Length: 312
Image 1 (spheres, rainbow, N blue to C red):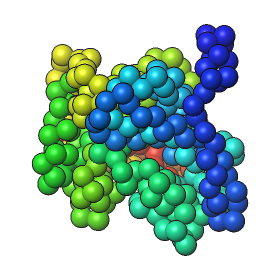
Image 2: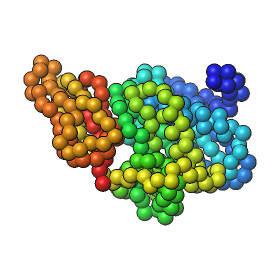
Image 3: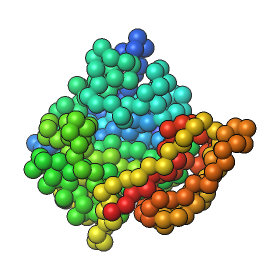
């Protein structure tokens, strides 16, 4: 494995592209690969959250697998977007504390994170028909693998989404309705299908999580015609249309319960209290559903998502 890795690095077509963000000079890895035949433009990103490593590793392996151009179209891979967050081993951009995943399309003269997202969108995403954004559970989070897809009024985006679901892009799919002004709605107006894939927990780098990402990416590639159509799962996925968030009400302690593949209404999610031990409260699930991600570490800040539960 290591021998193959170092061989790949010696011949890498990844370039370190300069970007100035909030007065800081960054070098962001980008592979821009032209296929052997005409076709769609596809963008793959990892490391929008700097401590979600399975998506980063999957993005690097996608470059390795497709660097010979054996596909139709143009493939742009940015394995680590949030270079400052990666360096600090945190989800957010530490320059200003913002999360790149929550910002779109960014601003050329905005905050450092807005500038980072603007750099990504203006240089790469604006030309894309498909954007695959690879995520995982952060260092503090447990997670069940799933894919976010989005309902829009764009016929091409809707058809692409349906193909991905039929081909088994994930066994768990969250189909969020289109909200005016949202990131995915703006992308749909540009003719771009946005896919947010989650695989991996607690910042770990496990092979199964990386391979799951790669399988999902190839299904999406097949749905837009970058490569021949792929099918990885004949079983219909569990599709959820709403997500309930349990959030921290104050800064304090969180003692998480063990979370599995499903949650029943009334199950214990954990217990919180203030730092002096007051206001202790057991937190129960208000609905039955599928836990998507949950906080496993002890620090709780007001507004923290302690558990996200998808339900139909």
